[in-house]
Amino acid sequence: MNLKARRRKQSPLNAEQKIQFKNIELLSTFITDHGKILPRRKTNLTVKQQKELKKAVKRARILSLLPFVLKNKSK
Picture 1 (tube, helix red, strand yellow):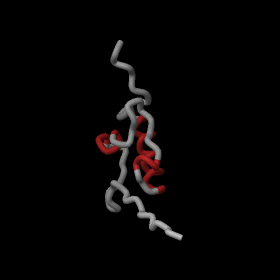
Picture 2 (cartoon, rainbow, N blue to C red):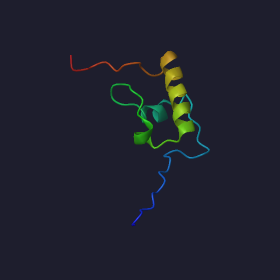
Picture 3 (tube, rainbow, N blue to C red):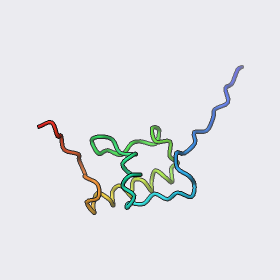
């Protein structure tokens, strides 16, 4: 049997780097054009980082730092 060794995906963030709701530039990299949060399989974040990201995005939306839904500018 030829078993391939699976490589672990590296997180794009450092272990020391914290996800905060104030850092809009960082949060916007993990959000789609429509304002949805990207899933873990696309962001390559750890479970803990993904949960922190979810909380930070929701807090930023409530404080009006991020929009809930991006409006269509074509009209």
